[in-house]
Image (cartoon, rainbow, N blue to C red):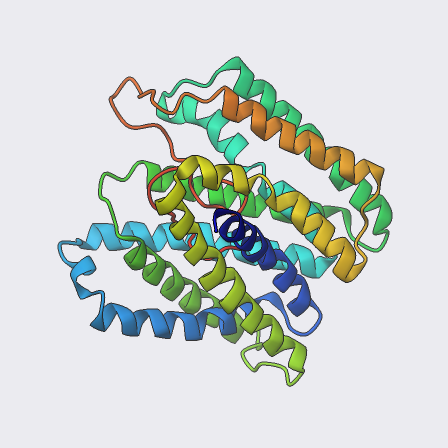
Length: 320
């Protein structure tokens, strides 16, 4: 049972990048994301108004504002850059690996921003991870001659948005139920993407069946499958199990994209992915999860490949 749950989680969480690729040819990123989040936000709002009302008690306006900001950064800003990069021609595997540098960057910034210990091993892991990203990105750029050079910078913007959300959540002293944060984040994303689609004249969904296949794919597999299994595995087997599985997302996505869409996967890509995995393993071995900062705050809750934090609640909550 443990193996089956783990395998399903890796597949569902990685499916977010594949779903973005599926919808990239049928509609702009704003349209796809708007129609992904509108029905999802409506369902979650209905649940919040009926079965989950107790979770909303004692939340202040400041708590709601913080969750809204976290949702805008970790979900809206992050997902739009992922979808836009894939729409520009960046492969799903490269986008996934760039996203995978998020825990390395967050770990490196934890020292200067939160006065938390960052070991030399972790700094070495960060440099190694960036080297792996550079290797895969150059291989992808060489294979995709029609992709503009600046398109490869777009996923880094999303990763930076995710890092900012991680630190914003890490500085919060209020524990918010996952059902509440997910509802606020999805409602925020639905509002922002609807406004963006309206401003760009792309509200109307295309008639192509592939668009609705992509929407259903993202809602069922990425959101309910990936997010639901994340919390199930976290509660049954612990955070270490989740973190270990997160390291498989980039290579699984790269292989999936190569098989399904013919994306490049040569020796250079394989070497870059191996270096990225080695970097994350190095950072994990050098981590000090029980350490506290000089001010007594708990360690920063960095994230795995798809943005789920390595501790406590997720502020992204829906996969890629």
